[in-house]
Length: 80
View 1 (cartoon, rainbow, N blue to C red):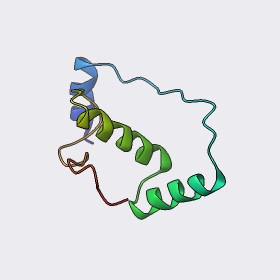
View 2: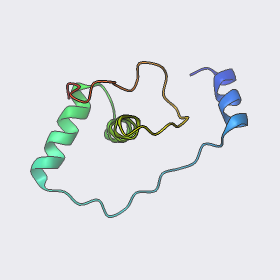
View 3: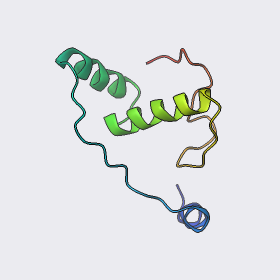
């Protein structure tokens, strides 16, 4: 993302941290989560935030964010 794009976004809406704590899953789920993120060339954080954004979009929510057109899949059955 370019510096000017970052400046424009910060003037419109502040960027804040997402503090998630206490997320406990089974070892198998964790392994699959890390494998899926790796297959998509993303960090686990990016993968999880993208999945949450796709779910919000699918439920009709509208939001600004760090995503560019095409980052969020319209297909709920997107390959993982």
